[in-house]
Amino acid sequence: MKISGAGIQSFLRNPGADTAAILLFGPDRGLVRERARDLAKTAVDDLSDPFRVVEVTGLDLKSDPPRLLDEAAQLSMTGGRRVIMVDGATDGISSIFVDLLKAGTADALVIVEAGILGPASSLRILFEKSPKAAAIGCYEDDGTALRSVIVETLSRYGLRADTDATSFLIENLGGDRLISRCELEKLALYAGGILDEPGGPKKGPPKTVTLEDAMACIGDNAGMSLDLIAFAAANGDSAGLDRCLERAFNEGTSPIAVLRAVVRHLERLHLALAMVDNGDSVERALSKLKPPVFYKFKSDFLSQMRRWQTDRLVMALDLALDAEIDCKTTGFPAAAGCHRALMRIAQAARSGKTRR
Image 1: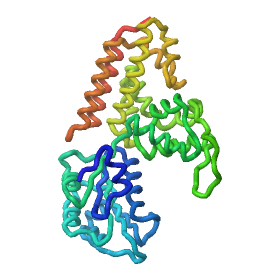
Image 2: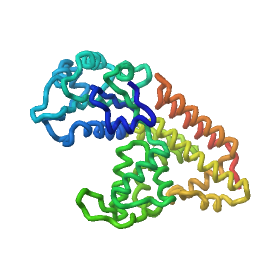
Image 3: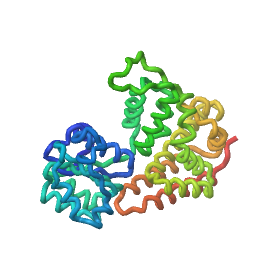
Image 4: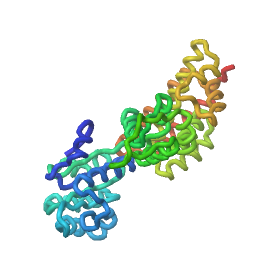
């Protein structure tokens, strides 16, 4: 069965005893891993228990196909349901899961982690169609989901982010759930937060995380590579854009995350130009943006405000949005499509007249 939308959270809390296997897939590897652990904890409290938790990879199963059935048939020596976690699954081992679902499991929950799987994926189709299995897509957090992650993570440390800090965090996080949580936990420690632990001392009212806190702790890390890509494209710097894209893709950043970062940047640039068209100077329009432009990029942003015209910005936004739609199409070369769209945006940045 396919689990999506509002049904995901309730399923993560209680997948049901009849569910023998669950597939988690998508571009957000951190979210895949987080949900896999949440599901595992519904069956086993201690995930380090070697008698009840087994971890294997897709390559392990490919070299030894009967292993999954053997593991699923075993009973725990200490009692309770066992968990089998399979990392790096691909369509190449779909037949192994066909055999598993036909045979059933003695008392085991099989949790399968995979990367991007298109609608035609044999593995995805198997889990979506089987009444004994479930499939959940894991995609980059949008603004609403990321806001919830920010609130939930900081609250565990007795903290809350003010409006400007929250906007900045949404702007600079979100490509990978695990990275976002790590960055938020680092911010919590920087801001003097104390982790709320069972039996620990009761905390007073939550402390406030300010924009300055967020910029000091997050600015040089999580979103910087995406910022560099967005600024290189809007600056018309094709050579710099090539270098930044190659580095981002080598680090595992998805083309969709790259395109969304560029769209956010162009939208802010469009908003600033609207203020200029309404009578503000470029400097005043820049100062009114919330959250403010990171200090390292202010001169570049001012140059872009003088370089771009509103009509060409609309065209650039259309290019980036169309490329994101293409990247979600099965069989489309996402990295190449992202690269081509951003190069066209960089070309548009070089072709316009400069404002005074």
